[in-house]
Image (tube, rainbow, N blue to C red; front, side):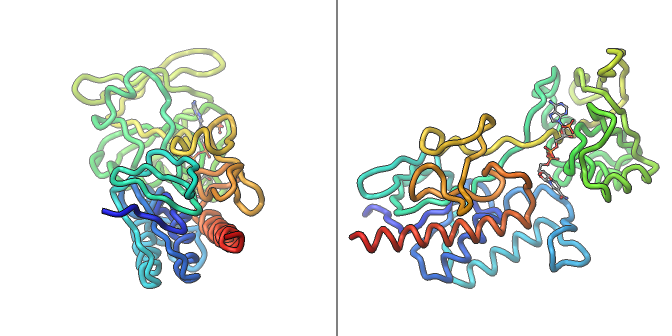
Length: 312
Ligand code: NAP
């Protein structure tokens, strides 16, 4: 088989990568999107997205992913799922992307690989993952019908998913390390008004207890150190995200947490490599910002490819 050479390679088929792909396909750029899992990105882990304009009744992450994919493929965009990009390096012919299949050479690369849930690292967390500990209420929530669960975190994800879990659980305790939530005010209002939600303020999760499955969670007050036990069958952890930037580590500059640094055109420190969406160092990570990022990165990559062609 001959070498696979493309003008543009987009890594990741979440909202950012797919939007970059839509713009590239419409510009008739020879482009392929590689996705290590399935199409959709982090919205797939969300029940309903209420703050993405154009959907006044909200839209599920699954439906939104399907719509974006349909739109992208209508313009002829090639999307390869279950094909991860393992490493990107600069070679004489362009960027060489090592994939789960054959390597691909590309003139320009857009990194839209997103982020994955942060782990807390408390005793019991790893042991009970899949046996009561979860990072995805949309995936696992229904298993906790008529049971009590805890949610760790105070951001948008924690509060939104705590609200979602009230559909199944009898009681949802949010464990938050401060006395104030970080989540959007509208989510806070809903959580505070929901009779099934209780908040363990200024508390940290000490450990997750159980036998074959989770049976409880020990928490401690951060001021007094006093410990107490929550009788829960599930613990959902939403304490931020970690960027999926390993494939370009060493190639591009990133911040201390691994989020890729970009300029205002979303170019990285490696000329010809752009980054967009949740993997990028930014102040806000939403579907709305991801799609804007995707458009900007795609136009930046196209301009770079034009400059490259003009030099040849
Ligand atoms: P986030 O906004 O970074 O919030 C993380 C939460 O976890 C914070 O409340 C933080 O506490 C807590 N936390 C972090 N490390 C911790 C630790 N070691 N122990 C205990 N608690 C810890 O993350 P996120 O909620 O996962 O959201 C990620 C991004 O996606 C955000 O930009 C968010 O806006 C976006 N998102 C948006 C929506 C929406 O708009 N509907 C939904 C989901 C996610 P502190 O508050 O004390 O720092």
